[in-house]
Image (cartoon, rainbow, N blue to C red):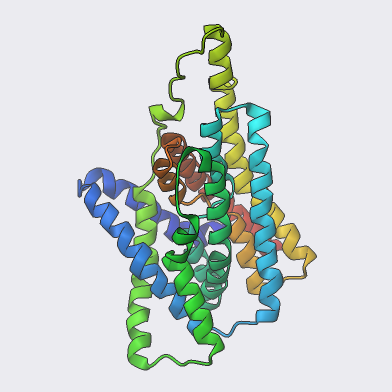
Length: 327
């Protein structure tokens, strides 16, 4: 019950964002602008402020990052199994594959702050900075044959990565924030988590769109219509539902379990152990939808998976917190 109560305010903000988007009729331009403000200004300020002010044990941070990488790579490997197990179309698979390992930074930072304050935010920031490039590379690689995107350019311009490494350099250099700068960044940090969670809720979609299973192209000469349809559409709607259910299970159950085992094996304790497990338990990031749409993928299917993992995480994340408390 204590684990549920710990996360209840954050999940309430997500649900409030969902309700506000559908009742206040502020328009898509408002929510798009809010997401840009959070992504480019508020969350970078939160990360830099927390990392710059927190004492970081870099010797312990190395196995911490390795544990996070093990969790993400485990999600990638399990995500790859969706193709031979359920046979979705290549483009549908390439789009939904990323939902098995990408993570929602907004929720991650909110949970880390609840668990360990600024030390938790700094630890989660280190993981975000290390894992975002890996997640982007794997996602774009899978979609690369169907679209073009400058991967290295996207990573170099990512404001969360820039803020993380700027904070680390400031920390390593022994810098001390002036009071005015600290208060300024602190005010931005205070606004970031609440607005970020509202934006997560506003982006929820409870119904999959038609593009989740787009119509097959015309059959080639010499190939029967039935045979061609089977080759293009995979193993039917039931298999498609099984594939999406499988991806949700991988993201919410298998990935945090791998993070737990890796952290335990490497001897992590305290803030690093808690944060890496909760990092694994995070739902899929909304950036997965943006990438799928930009590269001509199955945007509607990805949007549904993002919403399903977010709503599912409201049940699974308290369970992982309970497990951490009992460990």
